[in-house]
Amino acid sequence: MIRKEMIAMLLAGGQGSRLGVLTSKVAKPAVAFGGKYRIIDFPLSNCINSGIDTVGVLTQYQPLRLNAHIGIGIPWDLDRNVGGVTVLPPYERSENSEWYTGTANAIYQNLDYMETYNPEYVLILSGDHIYKMDYEVMLDFHKENNADITIAAMPVPLEEASRFGIVITDENNKITEFEEKPEHPRSNLASMGIYIFSWKVLKEALIKMSDQSNCDFGKHIIPYCHEQGNRLFAYEYNGYWKDVGTLGSYWEANMEMIDIIPEFNLYEEFWKIYTKSDILPPQYISSEAVINKSIIGEGTSVYGEVHNSVIGSGVVIEKGAVVRDSVIMKGVVIGSGCKVSKAILAENVKIDKDCIIGEGEERPNKMNEKVYAFGLVTVGENSYIPAGVTIGKNTAIYGETLPEDYPGGVLESGESIIKAGEA
Image (cartoon, rainbow, N blue to C red; front, side, top):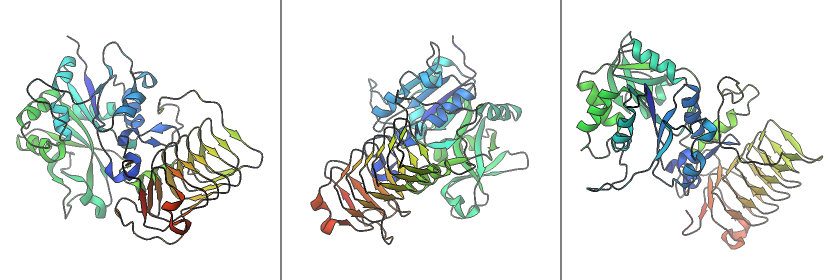
């Protein structure tokens, strides 16, 4: 029988509803990031850099682009005869077919997959965080403490602690209590949603809790194991870690890539981030182009100005166009004379000439003020914006829009245009 010391299970089924129109046709882990990557590249690269060569990727929502991106795992050296990367969508069983209904339920439905490797340890990961972590060091910590479960945790500001699962530990890092999103947190050590389980403990807990609806690690499995007297430890992590679950944090994490000394360095030799790269021509920067403090993807042509922005591959920025503080994904075309500031433009958006994007006072978005905030303009993939329109802040656009969608040529701050059947 094959035996792997540790295998990873990567939860990548998330819809990412707080990313609004960016995820209407694509799963959150497949959203582009940092000019050439997708979010899932980070945990996959961490796995291979940590010596883990068996990864199950659990997909569910809009999985097509994710499946195409992962393929057979070649960019991450995960195309193995034994192990490697396996995409695990929900499938029909004879007695009942059901979607994954919670993080632990998704893992439970793949017990057979894990069983084939008969691992000693199982690493549970989330597919939507940007960070570098050596999981081997965490495994050493798990073994040293003779732990049944190790939870990666990081200190967060106390005022933000109620957004997380919080762990309370003794002086040896042993977890004495676990509180899911407490109103009055008694500690600032937040669970990062990264767990190492000893296989026997995980299997027993999953089978025991399998009838829970929406069975979840934070709410059900961890508290159950704690009650059973299992040894739970917190592995404190102090590196860069970003949950890019909101448009604001997604935009910020992209902007941090272009700091003079980036907080998160993509260029380290010893801990590379791997991705599936398309074969593209080099960039073209015209003689009148102006670029400062930006990432420019392969195959991109710049005839205008780019300041403090992350530009993906195959983008065209025409003459006289100025792009500032924005995230532009691959295949976008920005017409001549456009002014784009603090925008997130998804893949293959086309903006016709002389548009002003990100103009005016901020107002709360009427459709969803929690999602479309942070003063951003968010445009979903394959959308079209006609020539000469002005678009305010905290706005969302999705679909092929027409001049008549913009009364007086303007989309006021806080307004949205979502074409029926598009999002």
